[in-house]
Image 1 (cartoon, rainbow, N blue to C red):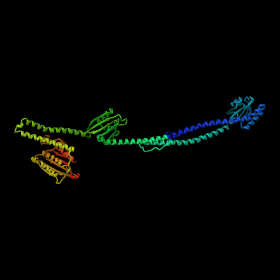
Image 2 (cartoon, helix red, strand yellow; image 1 turned 90 degrees about the horizontal axis):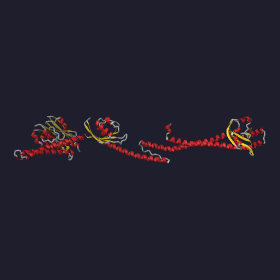
Image 3 (spheres, rainbow, N blue to C red; image 1 turned 90 degrees about the vertical axis):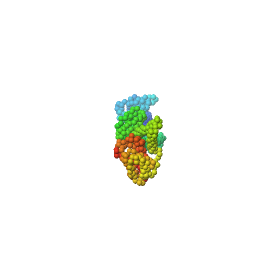
Length: 598
């Protein structure tokens, strides 16, 4: 009930009815009061006129000093004429005649001489009063007139009528006034209902619109109102709704765009509040922090990511907002290096983001840096060895060995060998660089494997015969692949050359091909010294040698297998090796069949 009366409609209606009815009530009370006064005044005036009409008869008897019986008879006669209570009194206020035939003794006990109306009449004025008559035991309206002639007072004539006559007039007036109040109240109620509805209905409609706007619905129009101010308020709400709709649409588009950007970032993004709880985390951050199976939003980062260095970074940024970059090494479930870019802010308020981390996985970057450093060191070492040998031999020749017929030719041959080795190393480096950077695109065409392999074997025939090796070809005639013939020839040349160099004397080399669906797997196997198991994972790295001394002795640069790997992968294939120590090695690679490429 209390809530009901706090609503707009009953509040306005109640207030309006209270004001109107209060006004009607005040007006009614005043009207009744004035009506009562007017009734009494009019009745008093009419009784005064009547008393003055009766006064001459009483004055004649009193002037002639009539007997009390005559005065009593006159009082009774006047009482019957006026239907009232007529009393004749002496100048001192003693009753000498009464229309009600009361004994004088009883009337005198009331002591009428002290009554205000009688006092006023004895003073020569017309007196009037309303009071309860103890003799008649009822309320009466009294009017007393003096009986005078030529300044001499002969007595007082008092006329009284019961108040019931006045009361009936009062009741009639009150009924009229109350009837008017009732009719006015009904009219006020109807007008109040109409006016209240006229005011409250559009305001209620606007309240609903405001609720719709708060719920995110902006397509609810406000109906026109007949009251200018309310209508203007409705127009303002409509304009506000349209403005909010545009703002919300713009904010939603920006939020969706920002979310799409964050979700698609390769770097991990984590936003935290002042308590270290996660407000936002993108898929990349879930993967980097191993949180794919967690509902991380709303949880404390310290509880779900247990790493002291990361916790120290978070605590530092919360205590002193700034930019902070730090790399953290993780060892479970695998070894990784993550780079954290942290930004602390005080502008997030009580519920906004106070710390934002951008996480990058720099494991590959560190590995490439390590490979680059090793590559530079290896290249420097590989270049230094032949250059040092050439310089040493040149200094020897210039020091006098040039005129020594027995040794000068030998020194020149050694210089030529080192220069050839240096040239081969540079050529391999250039070739590897071109393959990795794809500076020279692959020239794919239909290549038949058997004739190409026979050409490579023919170019290495002298080395094969020198070591007494036998070569077995297991290539089906007409077997073709889609590849760059020059690059594939280089692959076969490197693998067969290695099989010759690292084979046993009078050993064997087997070259076979197996067709698997749309691919051809080529295997180059030898019966050489084999490769230790611990060296197999690194055999295709640049400058990696199992036996460094023998490799240099045989003229190897350490780049051949790396070149093979990059060429095969450029064709979309894969390269692998199987080996047992002192039993030989089998290098295999895959190439697409002609029908697999358009």
